[in-house]
Image (cartoon, rainbow, N blue to C red; front, side, top):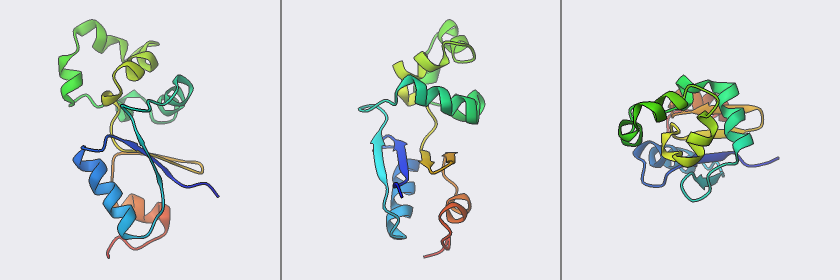
Length: 121
């Protein structure tokens, strides 16, 4: 059985909290730094198809605020995949892939249910 894969940015508070949560419960996982190893277009496209742009794109990020109107508009169209590959910090974090599960963001209750563990330590 393959390990869960957590996609994020090491210095992101939510990603750090998620990794700490997994480690404290002995849940082995692979970590992928979105900046250093941006997923291929096909993977980002699958995320967009499964989650939708509203769930996947972080519109409160500093990167998003720095985009001009045409770049922001591209995030809602066919150019969304290339825009997210170009600016991986626009992807909400963390993204968890495991078996047939795809989660974005971190919720202790959601993770506890996925991994069938207690939310408490």
